[in-house]
Image 1 (tube, helix red, strand yellow):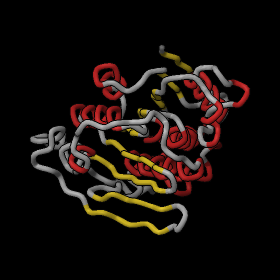
Image 2 (tube, rainbow, N blue to C red; image 1 turned 90 degrees about the vertical axis):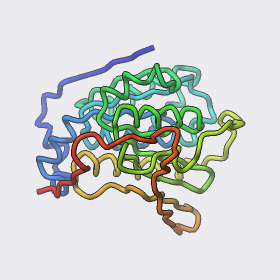
Image 3 (tube, rainbow, N blue to C red; image 1 turned 180 degrees about the horizontal axis):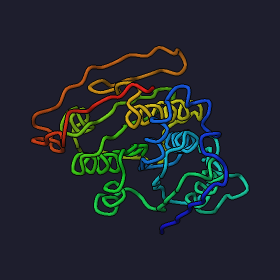
Image 4 (tube, rainbow, N blue to C red; image 1 turned 30 degrees about the vertical axis):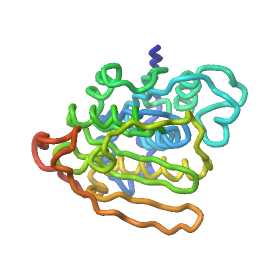
Length: 264
């Protein structure tokens, strides 16, 4: 099921973003406006990323998440509403995002991530956020990122721990380079979640996307960032491509090497 929403504002759009213009400049803001971001999963992590990308003025968000709202969602899924328990997550998420910023176009799919189904969503996006909790969907998004040549911010959390890495196809390690694909036994939504930890991970993912779009700073590549939100002790793991990776073996960077722009 697809849901679309778009509305034109009668206000000067730069008024809304006046505080961040001091950081990004008008050029950076225009780049955000012209960008499309696909977010796979708009739960606690992806929903937080969607909130801040909408607030920042990304021109279009394409979001995918299946199912209906249940009570255990509400400790972390900030796009969802207690009054809409039992209703479709996607319609509630879109309503929430349009309240946050009516300037942003939102295209939503109440679907799980599957390679062939999600391919057109990724193809028409500039950047991907992987915010799914299970490896089958994460692997499919990774394959799509590599196949379509789209940068992907890979963010995850478990309990009090979060991690983040950015994939530039043909230039950096991908998800399967780090976690080779294998059969996994999953308990759907059975892992422990503190909403604040999901939120921190989502905020970091949103910042990474903004960096990629505007070039305000280099993206976090060839490194895995991990943070324990109880101790606030981060650590970094250096990454390199696996020459035998089943997802990105032989893939070359499309176009020029990744370029970064300092905002003016």
